[in-house]
Length: 602
Image (cartoon, rainbow, N blue to C red; front, side, top):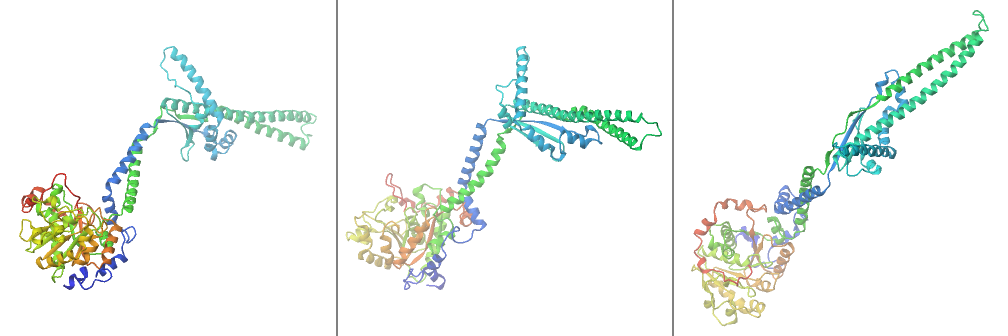
């Protein structure tokens, strides 16, 4: 065997340990997918998203639908605003800060203070009383035939307090009273009533404070006037030139203080009048604007949330998925070279897809079998790889289809090929035969028929089949018998290639028993079916009996998908189903499907 291929299949004399496949041991040392082995790359993320796109789409649609349903079922909320200006400059520049302090306190905390005042139970109760009176008046107007608005029910003071809030325009003396309700007109009325009641309360409170301050100043003025009158009586006892300096100073001090207090008194009087305009509504309430639910916004947010959640679920599902998804996965878990990749083909009925090399020779799948044929020929450069067992880890991975199509491809090169159906438990080849042979492998092994009676030629003098024959009661004993060994040795001398289609390794022990009888084993793994542990266990079982593992054939590759294979097959998709079928009927006349007798794909 050439050096080029010796590392793939190993020498026939090297059958210790892992069956002469050191590549397998090295692969097992680093086995793992992107979850537990190598670091993920951008391609891996894109592959997962493409592979699980329907999960992402489904989760996203579910989240968006839930958001829309929630929005549609939610009762709308409306918000009304009243804008208020607290103008403290109405009293004039000279007394602004003093008057403002008397009326409101520290200007820097005025808005915060007003917010707390607005949200008191006393204020809410006053608003409730005002609205109650307002709607009673409206009821009289309605009886007189006027068109007025009256709500179905009036919110309680507690409900009013719960749904009111204050918002301040930054770095200004402007703030807003906001009320939210399910009725847009009621929210308008409550917000307006709140503003009016608040201004009324604040004005009365400020006027009361100023009035009390003014009264206090007036009382002090009255006391000074009495004191000044007393000083005046005392001054009358002296002539102008004999008034004592002390008395003159006392009189002057009293008069000056009186003048100061009187000026302050008049200022407070003016402030009391100006306070009527200290707070004013600069933008009255209007019918409430809908603030909830915001269906469009909710849908957009749900879309983004759904995408994020969908991608998360997709990666979780992909992480929990034990199937092999990428070329690297197959290499790492099987630990043997990939010698063939067969594209999934959907352009023909199912029974014709099983023999795609006959029915569609120009298809991507048929081209995959030609590539596999080339690799198998390289493996047999020294002529020591004639008996090849074709098997898989589990049922349904397409081992029988691979064996038949590979045999057809080899026979096309002038090689004499025999496909032996050694799966005696669930044979399927006779399902595709137009003329079912009367003899098969079972009859040959039992000695009731000769090899010549069981072998049939399929449309090509170099391509032959030996079907199972009658299903035996003891298949394991038959395939592991000396008769089976002798038969294979005989066939080695009569054919260039003998392809033995054997049962799945993990299902029964037949393949493990036959593996030492052949020159090499080709494993078939179906994309989307093959699993990590199954792959590892299959190679382990075959290695224990020193089987020579020739390589792995990946079947049913999604050529158009993002699985690491699409770029191999994309150019071939210029062929249509009709183009492929026109020249593909050379062997198909010998194959057909019996109704009601279709066995599982092996």
